[in-house]
Image 1 (cartoon, rainbow, N blue to C red):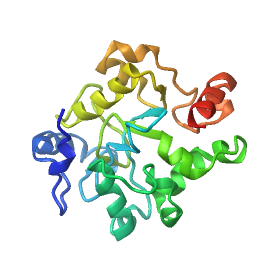
Image 2 (cartoon, one colour):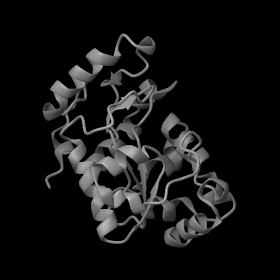
Image 3 (spheres, one colour):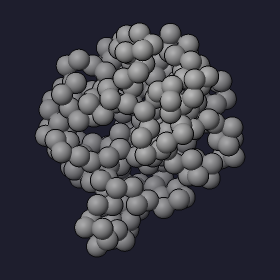
Image 4 (spheres, rainbow, N blue to C red):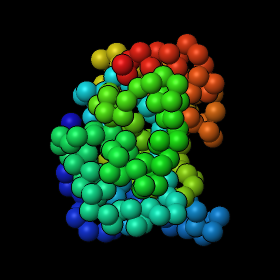
Length: 224
């Protein structure tokens, strides 16, 4: 399947042409609810996946990228923008999982991931470069929103690419671990019923407590 993110516009709004109708329709439904927290932010670069699906040994399944304080400024940072765009195009870079790049660690994206992966570094003793090469996260929905008031079924055509990446990870027997959106991933394909999910989707840290000791050790071993 051809990578649809090669067609992403260079300027905002950052919406793939094939997703435009779906995003406008979705925003029309949620914009008046919950103070607009579910509105899709098309002024931030989409992040449908982070990392290299080919070199990854561990693939995480998530819901969608969020919106927080500082994200707007971070997405204007040339280094951060370049990392996202190279990732979208599957181009090589020093840190495939770019939130682990020390040059970007002050961005909200990096701060979020460093917090949620902390135990891999502090207790398991893994180094950032190794993890950045062997870890990938795939989002069920590629666009940013403050809250995920999303339908339970596929909304945008571009989601199909992420779904194919996740199914490929299962087929090639990578270690696939669910963070969030269990029902949505199972709705994509019944194969995802076999995927172990973290205990708490609200606090989705990759830790021995949240994954369980056995699964956490499997993650550590795969990343090593």
